[in-house]
Amino acid sequence: MRTRRHLQAQAGTAVLAGLLFALGAGAQTPVPEASARSNAFNDPFVQVTDALPGCPVPEGPLYTAQEVRVLEHERTQHGTSCHFSGRCRLANSYLYDAEIVPRVRLYLERDGRFGDTSVWVLGQRRIVTLQGCVQNAAQAEAMEQAVRLVDDVMGVVNLLSVGTAREAVRYRVAPPQGR
Image (cartoon, rainbow, N blue to C red; front, side, top):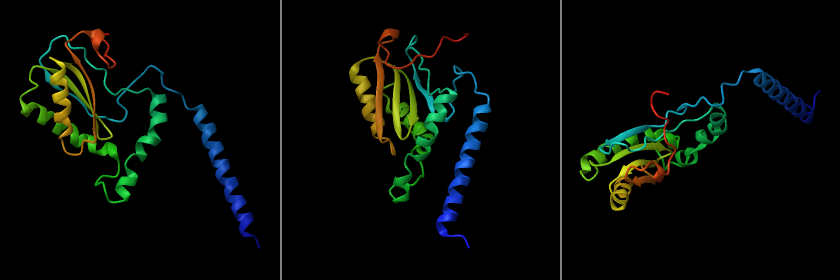
């Protein structure tokens, strides 16, 4: 008759063997080119206004395969404790973004104060990032405050620049088209 401790030791050995096998198999899997980047998590990223020609276009939420592997676990965990406690209706914070970004776009379009800007909106984990160009600092602040009013938005990152000078932007700029 086997003891409980003996069975636990066997189970532990089996788990360890499985992990070692998985690690060995993973080492043989070809790794995609490091510079290839994509929006692997389908983070919503849209242009909401387009009135300032020459505004540097943001690159958007692009990740290498290595960055995706590092971020996967963290992204699946965000918001689960909130959901399990009954405070949040969706099981993951990132699930809200597909609903939030269209509402932000609609709200900014209907507001009427931002038609003379060129702005892109990125949604990640119920946090909205504003990127692009505005006429003045007061307009950037007003846009940030307006986005904070949209339901389910937990925070706003304001990376808006006054004017269209490429040197003034605080976000990664997309490479020129045609390359």
